[in-house]
Image 1 (cartoon, rainbow, N blue to C red):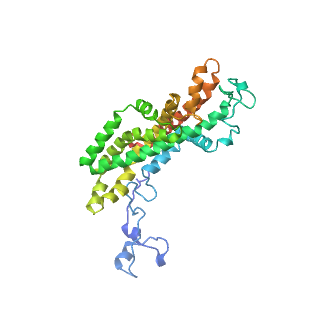
Image 2: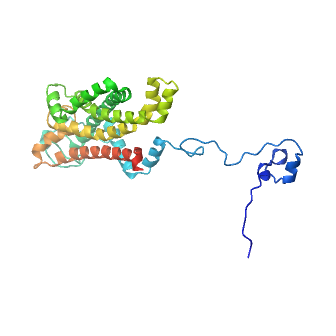
Length: 340
């Protein structure tokens, strides 16, 4: 039988460089001990590479955002919802790309008629093309959703972050203020607040949603900042003399913003549905603004005679809300370390 294979590490061979600076060559222990020739610099071993925190070898480490993007690219829910949202945003900006009609022009002789050549969704009560109005209605709904979400996220993040970072009386004051707004039912508040507004544009609705939407994001931001503030790298930055502003902006905010992004993404779809609800009740957007909620409200009384008037704007609204909620769920799964 062959003898067992044994390996022996000869450090003199591992440390001996090639003659003249070339590749490595074997050197005997006797030659090395005799000290002949010029001093030789030990060759750096392959496992002696610089260490990087969180990833080991260079090029192999990924942070939270890199890991999240790596997971999102392989999540079919994220891909489908992102494509739908991209299409809806494109339609909201340039509705004339897929609808060349006028959403305000109608023909009363064709009122409530069903689908016809060139008018696949039929006509509404005033003889206007339902397809054109459905396409143009995306602009108002998505504008309200994006602007209201951006305003509520910005205001809630700033107030909640400051409350969680400084604590004390500032935290107590903002927490009690948020509790006051939490006690107002958002639908009832909309009926009261918007009923005295005569303008039918999107901005009063955006302002109302921001006014009652920031407390939720404020609490999420406060809790995230309080958690991140206890980490060792934040304590080290303070010990090295970093100012409160630098500590908050450079060390805490980038690591505490993930929960805010998740909540804001999910809330965007909710705000779009809220705008449609308020417009349906007659206190949100008002004619001549083209909105899915307005069209659903005008078609609700004719659901038996002309169901197509209600089907298409309601379907577009449901698809939009579903796409944003699915996107928020995918982002939450990617950014939450507990779900990995």
